[in-house]
Image (tube, rainbow, N blue to C red):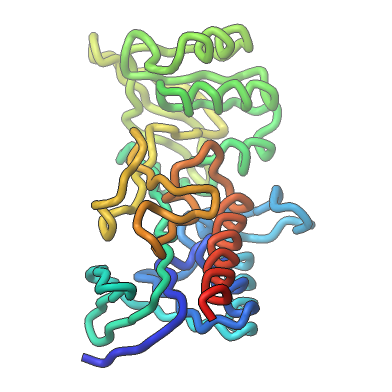
Length: 306
């Protein structure tokens, strides 16, 4: 098997990975980004990215990530689409195995992100970006004064419903149980904001022609089905951090990787950045910040070793 040596290997070509690659390459490091699919991750679902500081007017997620990729490559970063099969640490070097190549480096960053836990109902996939969203901050403003439905019952769902209530006076929240799992203070605030709860109910389908127009709901106790008109559906039923390659690392209760403020994990030289990392706020701008901080830390470590 071919062996390639680098200063820094990044797994994942989302905002965190590409920002890290740019900063590392610009700092003179030999860096490679390995991505199992196309670059971008969740960003590719964004039709209009309008809340990234300094980026105005809005661009599509695809255009944004393509510019990040080109920028990183312009500074000398290498980006390869390949599936990583395993990670090991041998003495002071990480060994990252793919089908045909082993990548060796003293520093490694996991930027594999997280994926939304889907409802798995008809219409969800078809209307993603056309009324179905998983990010209130990203897409909420497009539905100002429209009929908005939130699906979920935890802290995230209730908190996002509170935010959406500042955009529209017609916000409902669908929850499969007869009480919310979120903290009482969050639930109380949500209800005071005028969000309408629909208990003991699940979404059976999301309906429309060119965009979301209604939801088919089912009461879990009676089996009765009803229709609810809607312009937007925001789904907050949880996230699944992509940590399969580093299951040995300590994680928080949500399964996100714990790091210090420099993005370094408990294993020296192993970093985590972006949505896969334990933190309070997950946005493109915070993912890019994580990647930059990790890369700068690696650069400083390498310089201090010389």
